[in-house]
Image (tube, rainbow, N blue to C red; front, side, top):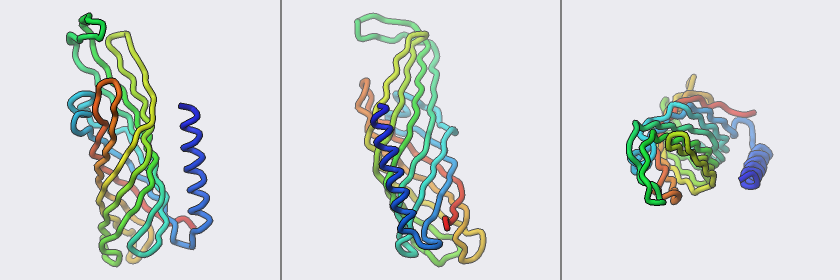
Length: 207
């Protein structure tokens, strides 16, 4: 796991340096967003039904035109659920009465593209797509007995939102958006970690 983190960090650093080297004044933007994560599908029904207010996302995007920009995104989200005491069947044919606790942390690394639908409008709507890797830390406890698993999975993202400039024709503003993330997770008998995410934050140029 340590080697995977090192590789992902190296790739991200290289991409950041490449973007910075090619950037022109006002062409490179940073996005910093608060992220509210909502488990979807079997992630919600099998693992965690609680939404997560513990998240953040950051991206650096290079504007190729007034409509198209692309870059990298990363972040962090923490999901937690404690279920009431129940009877659980173990693989060794034993039954145990215990409180079940699931704790899952996601750290995505995405290549992302954003397309502005109305680049000259006072409020600028956009659509976005992304794909990359998702670092997953999964801890599960049955009473005092627990297990922990870490792995890297695939992640795909589709989103939409609006950027509201602080001033007319300005390059800084408020970002409000939502996205759906498809995250297969074929571990421990579970199916996926798909989520619906709500974001709010700021966009500003890097000169």
